[in-house]
Length: 218
Image (tube, rainbow, N blue to C red; front, side):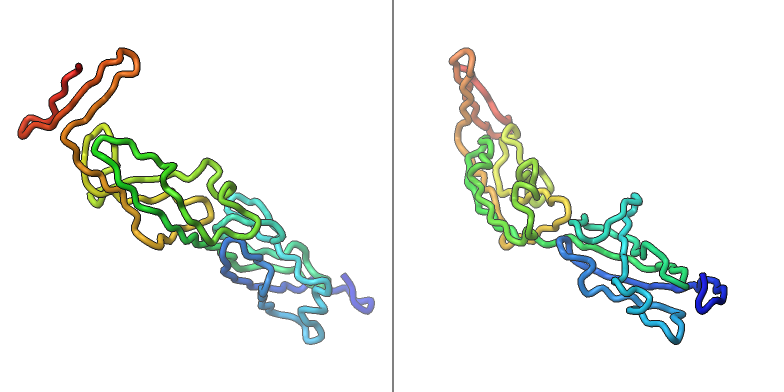
């Protein structure tokens, strides 16, 4: 390189950039880079008259320019090209945190041995970032969990009673804040009835003290 006819070796310019944003935000907005070793005649604007060409690289080496939606995670912040008279060394990290979904779930009451009908749950979800929807955030549908305070998952075949907490699986790029603790209340019954879809017969089960469940097909 040359300036005024003299051969000039490129000077090392260290660029340090660190930024934290939430998923869905533009990493380029408000980004600040600190440069070391600028010459007395240069400024950031004169070295990069068209703006700093940032590049954000994830742990797998995939690069983004910040114009597209970027998954939550950590990225190296690089400057893609070296400026005139300088060799730019980029240092720094972009952290994209999960966005928060506020979720409200309703309670359910069922009978002992009854399967949970998840269509009766009507979730209210806010906090989805612009450009996304419930369908894109939960591409396979909302997956519910029913677990009591002892860590046992509800199974109608276990014929248990009690109270089970309702939660949903956290989707990619989001964390969930529940506005209330939703419950499934499983009430006991005297008899459990299981009709056969093939024979037309009915199996009736009753819990006997100290003997467990006694079943009879009629």
